[in-house]
Image (cartoon, rainbow, N blue to C red; front, side, top):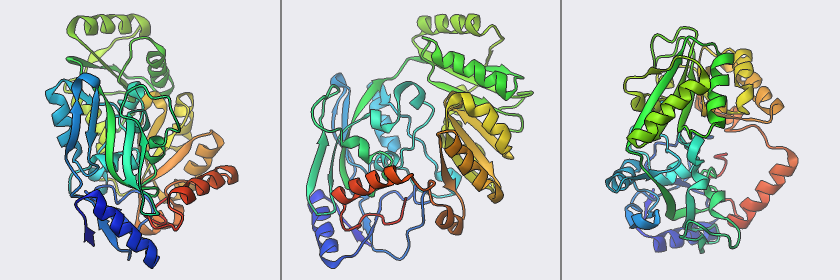
Length: 382
């Protein structure tokens, strides 16, 4: 393992690796290594020293950080000025039983968004600019440190969900968002998936700007007394506007809405997959059209599951024999199924995602070749 402490050292390491034709694995906090195909027996580039707040301009809603900065540290600094990250980064270390602290670069690299994506979008909608080192050993910059940027290619978006296969990140600039003074979490209890998801989609289409919409079926371990299931709604705002939102929501849905005690913690558990932490089954995250959620959940019939993003994301704890069904249903419904947790052998067999269609695979290969022509970065991870 080679530990570096600055961008210049990254450049030197990559150039040497290229000269010696030696691929390597990029590591920092280590909490995301359970996601994607196992990388073994490769040299490691430890970038964990690339951490800290580089520049923070709260008045401009901009924050620039080094990629190995722990997510809790970033969130704490922003909270002091009444702000937050937009994509609600998730910590899946509990799902994988891995110790350590998740880093902001890791969250971006694997697109680890939480329920807040519903209102403010995924990481690619928050990442304005980045610095990094490509596979040629050149320092590159993408994007601009302004909220409104309409010039050139939006290269930072490519880094989101690339699993470290395009660049060694050295600096990230985010648009940040105001943190509301209050939040309310409400539940519609004793509703089946068809009715529950319909309520959530109605809320998603409303002008109330919900920041969390989830469905918990019976047998979930996060909320008791759900009956046939519960639709969970998170609304945010200052005290008086929030009260008005709640009144409108009750009128819009025409059903009883119960306050959920410690609802903020509930959505944090949904974000981090806490319900699946001790499951011995394979864990999937299935991105689909929200209207398809009740039908697909019934077809898969996973022993343990929940719906997030108003149904646009299904968390599934499924038996190995369900893998082909999950992947085929995702493909048939223009969705995508990510294998979040499985044994090393199953990760190697199934891959993180299903094989891409030829046109998309060709596009991805072209992008990979442009950034890392020798395939040095995290080979095989996705």
